[in-house]
Length: 517
Image (cartoon, rainbow, N blue to C red):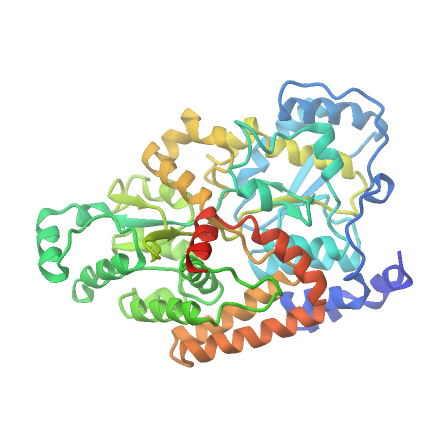
């Protein structure tokens, strides 16, 4: 460890971190203050790993985690674990804490730390303060590289090999999420615990209404059906936009923070990666401009509140019958089918549309905030903390966790899609769409400074959608600031992670890129 690493915590106080301009700027400061080059630790003693002194036994990941924690806890009388969670997700973890404590003798407590930027700031502040405030926390994938390079996240690779959480196989994490969700430069730093692929939700009673079908065909010259392409969806949004009746073509996530995700999936499905192999931005090419213009074009048919609505408000609006279409996380399928909702049992589920690229449609759906557990380097009991994470995301516990109303984690393991309880909650029809969506899911920008790239893109997409800039100007500006971020962190280092990540884009995108070549 360099002298910079040793003195960084003393030089950077919490109030300084916050004065640096929020989470994106704070992340930049952390990483530019001597920690950027302190790459992932692999030595057992540096990661806090214990010497193996007991046999790992158990027929499944939950049993192996519980049995091993019980043995390991004998060395640490009075050990307790603390889990920091994003606000709103407590229900996916807390109900299973008493069972863990009963079986292992290790108490676990949970506390919420805000959402979005507020939560991200709390996570990254621990890299500075090193308080041991939490043992485990589940950041979104785009934060993981920064958590690694700031020396917050422990390398879990050896524990994964030792305790086998079954990240692959018949109970494994759905591919390609299993490849990129918790990994960085080929090492495991997080355990996936959420399958947050977006899907398209449509009002089935409108889509399948014979009179609407006839009118649509007269106007557009083809059959009204589930849209496979973005232009087909645009036609439906325009057709069903009826503001005089209080009914809109869409109630999509257009607000500041989510609009970057809307753009990236439209852009990637034209057969594009975020960067080329030299880490030069691709978002301002002709496909990027066309993608952003597409979102501009359909924005006039959206519910007028979309510019400020958070995801919960779009859920409620769609369920209250205010719009024909929305993009949402899987939990919306459960939310909408509650008694009393206007749209209860009136939705069709569709894999995110694509563009026709050289004769074949390319589908790519965004996977925003698909949470994954990291273990803090400043935990007093890092191996115990890892075992709790394996327990909670195990095939056995996670199949129950995704059913809890007090959280928003969604199916992410293959066994979830055949579990009777999960099928009852989400419906077989939706789970088929979700599995297909996960299999064409796009990674977030999982490089160091991912928070910054995403935040800067969001600001420019917002400027275009609100009419403050043209699509070309907004994306040229995004590309320019992205280049600045890349240069600041070091192009060669960023290229290494980017080239590793790019290989796990959906095969549909790889094939479309090849057809265009």
